Length: 278
Image (cartoon, rainbow, N blue to C red; front, top):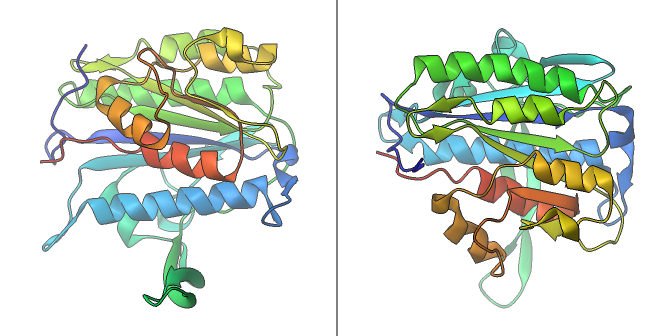
């Protein structure tokens, strides 16, 4: 299967984010003083904003993408969107653009053009709130994701296949999710099977394992399982992955283990770079 379908308003593609909101996500990342949950929420909100910008044209936001967020923790799975987007899970990108929960004023550091840096105020839309509670029902969230993606692919048979990005910091507490993800990866459009990407976030100083080609490089059985649960990087994303990680090999899986700040940001940026917008 080729993963080369043009992405258009008639044939959009889908991004479905699965975000772990278990109690362990409250662990602080020392370098920034934020919890894993807060940092992941910031990166996800920035990613959603960037996706709306990519789809913006003079006449408005074109629906090249449909977006969903499932949050899982405390033994429940729910839509990660609030407000007017809380009904249902998958929404066209124009609806996402129109309905953030709020817009915050934040500051960022930018080059002043004279060899220094200045603080600049910027608007930051918020769609997804950090939550940290309870266990990690990974099987339940994958089952719900599978139902959503079967329905989506049935309605979009000619589209670029959906991309599901699972972000977690720990092991499933409701069973073995590997068999379920094997089934998810069989859901398809005429252009290819659904793509399952896994991001394991961590606060240690260990070097992350990013885009491995074999499970033997992973340090433990949990990492090896997440590797097996992840899809190979599709051909159109290999050049993008190599821009960030030049050693990325053919056959590498779209998976990062023990990811810190930089690897988390890079993973989201590469994972949402579906191309061929028309």
